[in-house]
Length: 321
Image 1: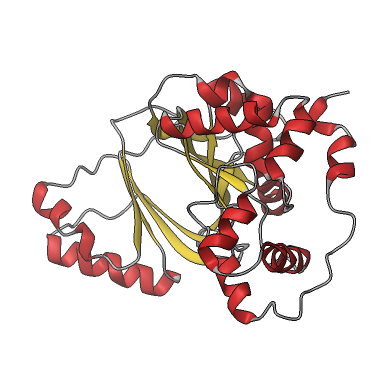
Image 2: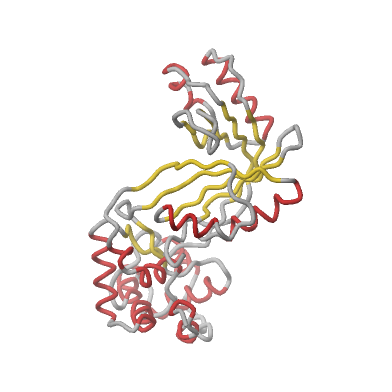
């Protein structure tokens, strides 16, 4: 049995929610929700350290965590990877029939590396799905895409983070556990160590080394983000190459989220320049028209796609793929 799918982990999780302490007030709840988003302690008794710095007791903090997690308001303790961890992010597009769009979008959302899905529509009735997927390398990307019933029509590497493939890459079991979340209990690193059949000090030493080397930014205890869809517009030009004046005016486009600029390519991404503006279609078109007028641009986009954008997770799951 794969260690990651062992029932041992679920047996270690708390089986019941601790009874709330009468003194656990709204102030403790706010402390839990906001106090350790970027600095969850890397020591064997983190809630003791947290009680010293917050003024709340360890019991109060654990009780608040249990209630918030049970209600869905608080995530487990998770890793936030640092700039030293090498990884790549691709942008891709899928041309689909209207009947395929929803099922494809749902399949993309389920990919552990998918951080963005956009359902696209055009005045011609043409449908498309666009996505951004992150992975440690091209091989990990292909393993994710292999589960889809439709391969991407377009694909380009958006950006990559350079670094030595060591640290978490050398210990994917531990990396996967801290990425997906440690249990909210008094000794989360001990539970993790037991899960891996290792000493707790070895787990803590590895995490501290990853942090020192820039692979791990921090461990976080953070609220569950609100998941909602938003509107956007994707404008793509095949041969348009804006001059410096046009580029200098790009920040004036309200809601502009991405500038997509690549060397002239082939069928995998036939557009040289693109803009992604987050706003309802009519407003986004107005903002693009204002930029065109101010920049003196008379070249219309070769393609404008109205998007409904969803963000399925706040960070890609890179390990255990």
